[in-house]
Figure 1 (cartoon, rainbow, N blue to C red):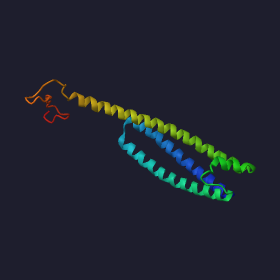
Figure 2: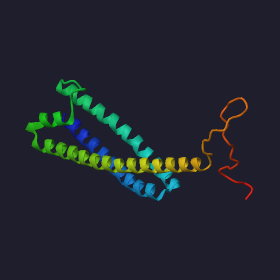
Figure 3: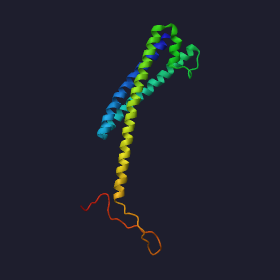
Figure 4: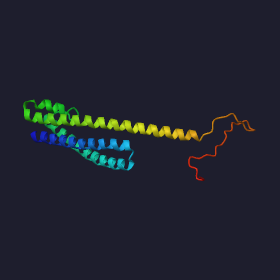
Length: 170
């Protein structure tokens, strides 16, 4: 059981380090979004994908270790959480303290990561709204106003503007 707990602590610590790296990358992404540097944004996204792959593997390992711990404790793996394991380890203060520390560190890192991602999400949303506004503004500049012009067949005919977004003649 002790080796399983040590392995769980190790996996949670590795997850914490990956999320710390992702938090740094996401903070860098905030600056890149503000500067509208799309090439650098692509590079950062590729880095994030690498870390996401590593996190998926760590998560699978954590689930496996937790399932092994549940088997030893004769518990349902679906119901077993790190908090539950910490409570079960009440008699082993040193191991309990190490697991509690790594759990709390991971929780705090995830909170910071979530905050940075929320900022990035809002920046991207605002950028998209500005782009949408600009496209609608440009589109509106080249549309003729609606007037009541009718053809011989009693169809509404809008005057055609011979203006394009890109004027190749100039």
